[in-house]
Length: 411
Length: 118
Image: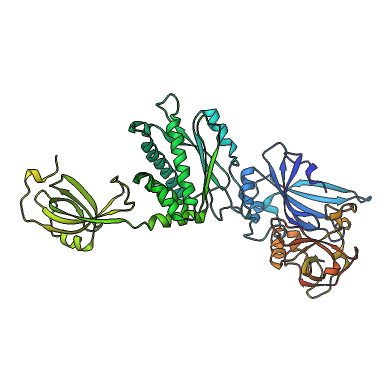
């Protein structure tokens, strides 16, 4: 019973996998050595008198094979809806000298007896990469060839049998990575425009489970400013390594060495990963380095890191605005915006319910002179930058006075 | 390894019947096997058995040729030979059993007849 030498399209064939074995392979696959053709072979019948067994052979493209192997297409459907010409019946017969001969006949799926089909709804459910396999060495090769920094983000999709990752999470993750890249670059250079002019671009998708390959684009620079990108990736990997540490304080300490934008974007990276129950492995090769760096954060570590960030108790401080203008409010969403006439600063944020009740009677216009008490929440209190600080309006009272030009924000 | 294993029985065997000798033909003796007439191969003497009932049922869901056979349960002791774990993607509990003595025909009882329609 030499299946591999049967006169089939794409022959000669190689044995690919055996799925069901019983005194020999009974349901297995073969792959053409030259063409993009796979065959699924299934034992379907037996002559009780002679012991001769018949097999159905289903020809599939690699895409169809992957879909069937991963369980997206039930086995019965794969055979029962086979296009004309893709289904064959192989009878193995024995001659008078007990030598076996295989005869192949094309078979119409519409003529298949029910008894030759797998049971309804049965699927193979085998993890099946549906993109080219990722190899870390490719990152160095790409970086060397394209003379730019190349990096890859590998995530996992539990229970996914093909190469996939929820689109929403993938989008959020890539946006967060781009944001983190910019935030770190801004910390590395005084040239703010430079930080905007170098940014990550997607180069490709690999398996498994899901790997996005990205490069650094710097269209306005003759050569990539590697002093910036090397430093950016060094810090990003240090932050991710800290996220993998079982002591949350290691992560928080690493985050305190950066501004709020970097901290917030790091949180934005972790959130879609935690939502997808995925860990992450980050590979990078800085331009002209021919070296590969790698850091991994397991799924449980991602969740723990996110919880640690969210548990950071903000430093609280209260201050009063003695004379200001209520320039915006949304009672339903509990949002406010106040201009402090004394310091000429605007404050915006959320209102407490008490403040909402008080503000509901105050009109939003140039005449709404108010005094107010605002709570300032600073998540990482040892940072001096103002980004990431949250303002909460705790109370507000109308002054009953007409605002003068000096009270109002400059036009 | 000892315990209860499942092997396909004759198509005509009815429930609770004892299996016949055809059930215990080795692969090198079985025309439907790719190992037929290859007695020099070690695997041609190993009998396929499943330890898991769920898995033998699932294999029959997939392979119509298996659905048209009965299923027999056989109790194997340590003295009955060598059992090697030979899992496949759809049969983690699949074992090859080299019996002791080599041509042993064990006592086994059919626990499920061939499936209707197959």
